[in-house]
Image (cartoon, rainbow over all chains, first blue to last red; front, side, top):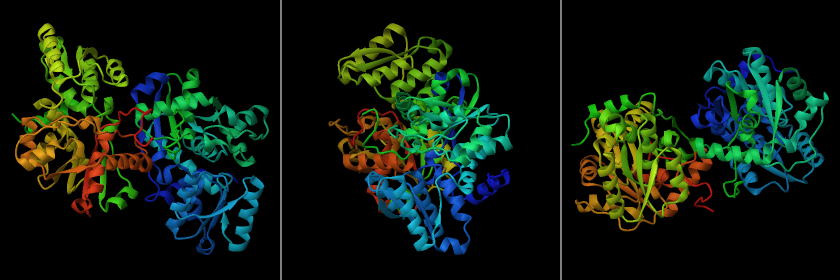
Length: 314
Length: 314
């Protein structure tokens, strides 16, 4: 079942006072480069450093007291893991996080800093799932998938509700696509709330499963996971693919060089720390100028969790 | 003559619609570290990347048409130069900028990008002043000092008017001090508008002329200019010293290590690109916890112009 507009507004209500209503910033010099009017939704300022907090919090808040007492579990080493740990801590319940043994220490520490209980496993999807299943069986914890979950999708969709209010009369809205939780949520919210607004996905060419899936009309996945946009290496699920296929205007793919260049622009011109995955929508607008010229375009800067010791231009 | 509250409100009016009313952001984890409630005034988002645009714009807008037609001149390689160039361009007049020959190319390019007309000179204060004098004689341009100028001070003071509105019931306000244009402006505005609010200066220990001048009761200057906070190497003028001496609650000095650590905290926790000079107030609050504990403290993040290829933790 896809979340309805009612579910999305209910998620927005659950988030009030806990998640940030992040600001929307603008930048004259980036507007000039794009030949468009850009509105940047700063989810890098969100709690936990990424929009993922919205979906995680919405999912955790929807648990019954009985369910929540047994905790939540997921497998991830990225923003979903840290944000789920934070959402769980705010409800005072355990969060079991299965992390591949080779995940960067800085990410493991971030999860632990938010109170997540780490379990290391072999770095394969099968091992991660098996370990999460085991924890679920032993603890009764609820598995919260990073994107293939209606409560998570409804939470991410609240980004669109806010952006549509904060930047009125948008022509288009661009967000990164990985597993598709954010993009499918934006599609649903925008389709119901502001059907005239085009929703675009932005994707690294090195992880272009959404682009190929749309072109072929069937669900395909990524095999390469080397893109610098480490938050965009996952592939769509059937659920997110079905929603995106129905509503998205298109997917723009970008090169690694375009990602790095957009990241540097955002840091230099807007003084914002945005992670590589979060700059992909700006890279897409600058790579496909003709699609957005003269338009009012909302851009989701999805997160700001980046290792300051390893910047891509160094 | 010191600017009056009337002058400061007049400056605020001149800035409307051209300078940004920059946002004030907060951060739970930095509040926890400080044991205080911190309100960060984000002048790194200001046009030109620094609060200096306020003073420069106020000065340029106060010129008569006849004066302005002959342009403005200053000697600086920092934010005052870029911001004056930008303010002049917005009025459509020339800005002559005298820059020491050894100033970083990245800064020379920034000044030129805003339309400033560069003149290189030997890297001594005498050579800079002589060259500026020559340009003034030959062109009739008006010299706009980076801080020893009432119009500039009144412009910088508008930071306090906004911050006092955006973060009500502050107990204290902390800003960096170099030549003292900002700090003296904040002193004047706060003394008139909200006399109960303490105004503190924050200064690198390696460039502590304000701290020493206050202690000795006479104007002293810096001899060392090696602090990483490259915007804070100037010394007070008699004008700014007199204002600061009358109104400031105190000056807190910080080490280079404390500056770098505060910079990293701001980038990591708040996802803000702030230059070393701009983080000195946060470094001061964290270095003098007992002075600010339990208080509501406004912190001016003065600018975000930093060379991304040379970050201090690398």
